Picture 1 (tube, rainbow, N blue to C red):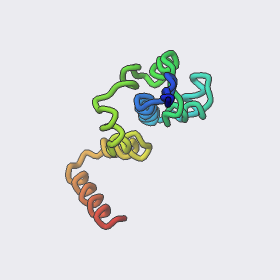
Picture 2 (picture 1 turned 180 degrees about the horizontal axis):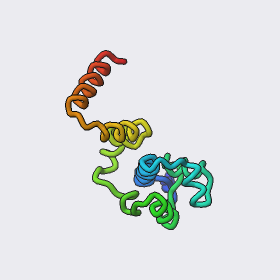
Picture 3 (picture 1 turned 180 degrees about the vertical axis):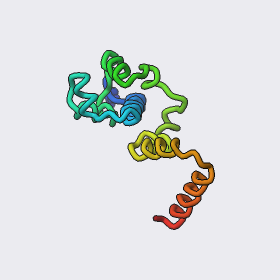
Picture 4 (picture 1 turned 45 degrees about the vertical axis):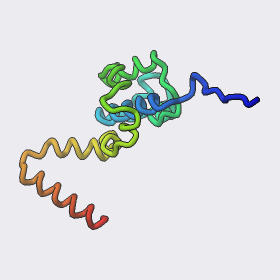
Length: 132
């Protein structure tokens, strides 16, 4: 008789990884380092890295603290419009939560000229087509 391997109720799952991605995205949006967030919570930056990578689950009480420090809600960190598979496969979500993505979005939002915006899009498409 085969034994079925049980998944630990404390094992990390897709929801934990998605929550970690949202924590990272919000932290970067506010220009807060992992060290700063960790210090505010009384934990190490390494623990913040583990939360953001989804290597460790975030306890509910800790998530409340993180949400408060990041000036958001627990629901915003836990939920989202995309399903787990869509979020995992979304290049847009991955890019937007990166430092480069946030920097680009902030710079883009300061551009007032539609002509300049169209030129940047055209240049980017050309560079991408050339594989640069």
